[in-house]
Length: 504
Length: 129
Image 1 (cartoon, rainbow over the protein chains, first blue to last red):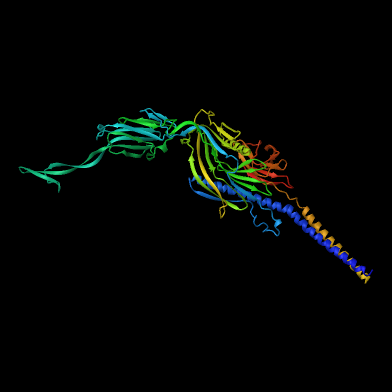
Image 2 (tube, each protein chain N blue to C red; image 1 turned 30 degrees about the vertical axis):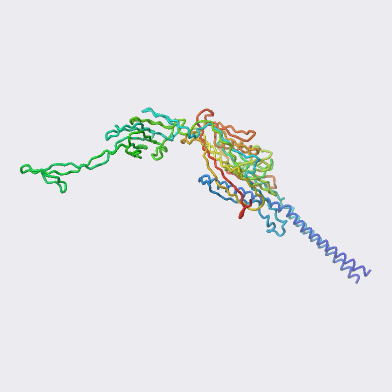
């Protein structure tokens, strides 16, 4: 019995220590479990949400950079923008924690150029418009004293003076041809140029001549006649000029400015729309031109009529399909919903797996309504990423995207005066194989047209994409030119580089 | 000697019992402290955009979590107008909700999207019209 006592006591003591240690271990494990289950995912979600906000800001910065190149016509200039792939910390995970597993797993991302769809997404424009055509040179003759109405600012108004004869090139022949518009007058004159000259005549007088002017004397009895040399101011015919004078709002802005000096027999032409004369900017269409007076053998002609002005022709226009390209960020989030941001045609779009695509910043297709002039204005800046560019980089290190503006090309819609149109109808198509993108473009066309109050539009989707048709205020595709389309294309060349070294 | 040994054994047992009591009490306090807290919830993160024209108003989901019916309310100037926005089964990115109660003579000034799916209501987006 004596021997058993200590042995029993020893066993009991060991049991209590083990139980105590196990219980403390249980508390610690429970605390860790609670943190891992609730704390870590919450931290990870928070950091991924903040990172996606950063990505959005980086895309906005990218768009502004590309817009600034386009707006300042900086062809050939490059900009670089950095994108952070993932929430970072992938290399030093756990540095802020006691144990690495206590910090959330960092997310990663992929940045890709022109990888959105198997076939390129494109922009197509078709319309019935006044289209720039350098081969068109129709003229409209101005008849003397008969008002002629113009609805577009002509590029040229030629005063043609043909077959000038030697007989009219004399000191006494003057001709003039005057073109009157609203608030302005231009006069083209054929006039002799008389230059000041000094001639001398001999006069007689009874008194002595001024010093140095006496040529001789004669005596008759006691009377002496003095012959003096006197200067007389006169003019000298120095050839005939064709000159121009311009009046704006009753004030002379150019007065007898020679266009041709000391002409010889032949034919001459004066374009009063030359920018040097400053008439073109003051013309407000519709305007009425009236021709007055005549030059010998002269005519005045507007190069281009009221509907077919110089270099423009009215026809069906179809822009060749323009691949838009894209710069895309695909997030590989662990705690927050996966999101894809992409830049396309000046817009920033967001795609989520649990829904559709929406635009964070709208693409460069905008509409506005001008009820004063019964006009719809369509602005299109087709900012495309070059289709031959490609690249894809994934991970969680920062990358920079270098983008060069390659070209800017205005689309050949006629530049018309403010308040007038150049198009009867227009159809804009965005083709894409991505069904979500089709829905997004349809929504965007609907929203933009509705917000601007554009009448008579038709929005829909086809098997290849989405489209909008605008017929203008008159709702008639064959009606008036009631849409003013201002459009241009620009091509950028993007490439992906690592920050501090090229990755590809 | 035998009695002394027995007393020693009693004190060890008492120590163990006290230790267990202290640990259990500590765990109890810890669990009460943890469990009595509101259950951690992921409040939806989303953004929305107001689309306003001369005679209409609508809300477009601009990205983030999808909201499900019953988990959110749309307050217009403080009034619950969820039904006037159609009360959709889900409201996800790109989806637009048309407001049928728009009054152009007395247009709305503020719109709040309130998450009600958690323990307490929480404003997740506030928009000025």
